[in-house]
Image (tube, rainbow, N blue to C red):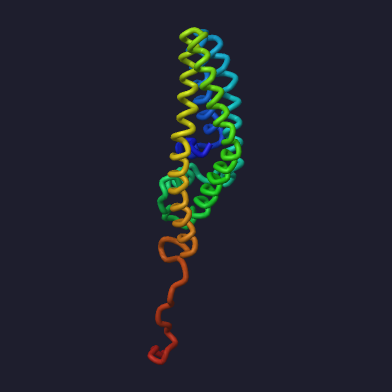
Length: 206
């Protein structure tokens, strides 16, 4: 969930669900179509799994970052962009939103970590099935099995690196947002020295 593209996070809850649901539905439907060659079955997978994944993703993202729903679309886009790029938001008004969004990504990362122990098991099972399908199954089924192995291997090897890099940038954005909040704003809105008062000894009278 952490690696859901930033442009999805910039959307409202409904559009988030549509984006994730459509992507997941097309992904699984493509596997069914390649393996079975039955387009009606692929369409059923698209229509069933798509909404399920979309609703689940939208709820999980909304629960992790509830403040995102209260931001204007332009502000939400600025917060997501700055946080994921590790940049200073440059607006003290949005600094708390950066901190909240960064915290949401960390919470989601920890939730994903709890499920990570399943991935080695999935890798072993998928590899065993791919070997079996290659030896005893039709070529179409073997192709799909090896595609699953490739997806699992990509998840194991590439996703952790990308997540770590993203969270490193998020940490930089957090530091910048905290500094901005502490200073009181980008335009010197914090404490400042007052200028000369007009009641000193050199003040004109009358």
